[in-house]
Length: 90
Image (cartoon, rainbow, N blue to C red; front, side, top):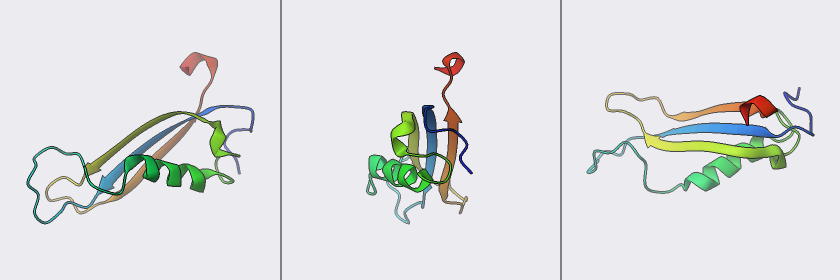
């Protein structure tokens, strides 16, 4: 079931939490090695095509972040939010 019809633009929010390397030299929370963020986002948009949205061309706004898991937290993965863009939230 599609959440938006094919004429409406959508906004895609994607948060990637990557595994923490065993030897972590930097203290910042960002994952600065491969895979590249743009390629991860492209893969998510491709997978959403035909399920939540008709076509990945409907994605008109992207907000994405790639971080490492916090110390002591083993959860890694991807959180996705797809929202229809209307005149009031543009």
